[in-house]
Amino acid sequence: MRITDLSSCLALSLAMGLSGIAPPALGHSIGAVADMDTLPMLADVAPEAIAISPHVPQMGIHYALPADLPTGPIWCVIEGRVVCVEYMFPAAALADGESWTGLLPGGVFPPITHVDFEYKPDGVGPISEPIYQLHIWFAEPAVLAAY
Image 1 (cartoon, rainbow, N blue to C red):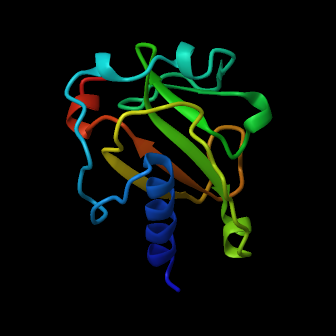
Image 2: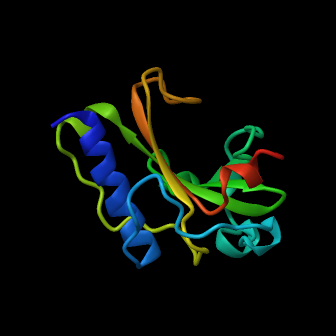
């Protein structure tokens, strides 16, 4: 199986599980967030989460509960609002067929606008091994572009 097929299956499976509805074809938005004020506050989702990154353009500051790392959930937060939930998967574990079931976003969120599944050959932050990152977004890229 090509990795693009695997990433599509993983993204689709997680999107369906987190939203409770069947998403349309990948690459299409389920629901647009026109106003950041409609997104949940991190203080309501994970009040004990700590910042694990500086501000990343169009993603915000990343927050997590240390016990949940490295997999996540990791919340991407702009102006106190959760714009996406992120999960990280070691590439070697994914290649070995490891499964991650029952992943929860840590709160109730608006509809998913889009899902990104990216390969990071050099890892990110303190993780130096190759990983895959799954971002489940609640705001459209056009809305996030201002941040």
